[in-house]
Amino acid sequence: MEKAKVYYSDLRAKPGLNLLQKLQRLVRAAGLDTIDMQDKFVAIKIHFGEPGNLSYLRPNYAKALADVIKAQGGRPFLTDCNTLYVGRRKHALEHIEAAYENGFTPFSTGCQVIIADGLKGTDEALVPVAGGEYVKEAKIGRAIMDADVVISLNHFKGHEATGFGGAIKNLGMGSGSRAGKMEQHSSGKPQVDQELCRGCHACAKDCAQGAISFNEANKASIDQGRCVGCGRCLGRCNFDAISCPSDAASKLLNYRIAEYAKAVVDGRPNFHINLVMDVSPNCDCHSENDAPIIPDVGMFASFDPVALDQACADACNNMPVLADSQLADNLATPGFCACGDHFTDSAPVTHWQSALEHGEKIGLGTREYELVKV
Image 1 (spheres, rainbow, N blue to C red):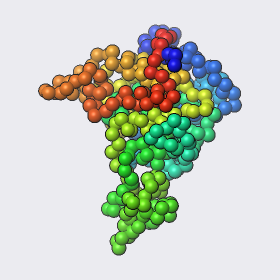
Image 2: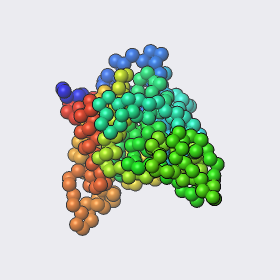
Image 3: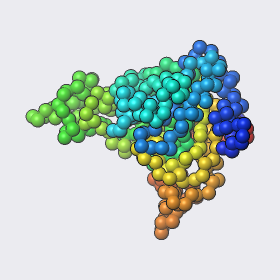
Image 4: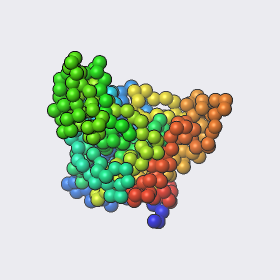
């Protein structure tokens, strides 16, 4: 496979050319304007940020991208899927409120917010994964699969489970329905916290396997032998009584994420943008953000999500470590075994390379790239 082109722009802004204009110039140079968008629904897959976190991408960048899409005749919308964990984005009402609170409104971005997997995270499309080894049929938020074009606008940062979060993580994990996220995160099956269970029996109505029963106190439990791990009960429970252990090892998690990402982009136009700034050590799903581990790097864009993430990881590893960060603390810890990779040294149990290696193996893209400065 020949090298993929990854386009790069730094974050210098002189009078007459601001960062939003530089982003628009970058995506056009990278070929976004070659995609036929006339009267097409264009999903901008983004992370709205958990309220309390301030490292997520500013909505101004989303508007700049949406303006380019509309200039090409497209009909953009901002989208994400509901979260698996308990927070303020686990169902569509709170998710939209969180997006609005963080500035992603139709008035500020020029396009609507659509939560792709519906009110409770159960509106999903079952998408075959061509070449999938760990996932045969991905559970993707239906609105994302209904789109004609998919564009990922990603905050490139560290991640406590995958090493870093970029295009592949935003596409794969982010586009999964709640059940899809469970499939990626867990090697096990859902379980019930009986202290939170209200005995409403709603979960049992959605269980096709008859795996949910109730004790004398009217508290639910799940028969792990009958359960097939479909995750429908997760979206059905309104009281956060059903959860799933996040016990998949980093490599297995990354393999599944790569296969979900392939399900999202296969067979339709797609384009990807990574903004490498405010490189916090953890996901924007946290309701806080720690200090950046490295200085800001720049903006990157490509048709190839694997090459894009590889280029960004390489650029980050060429940056100095910032003092008073999680990475600096780890490196200063007596006996810490540093490997020379910023993301692995920041979160030592992770293995970010596995997502890119597997993505290349299954045809999601290539790790070989040519960097083009814009």
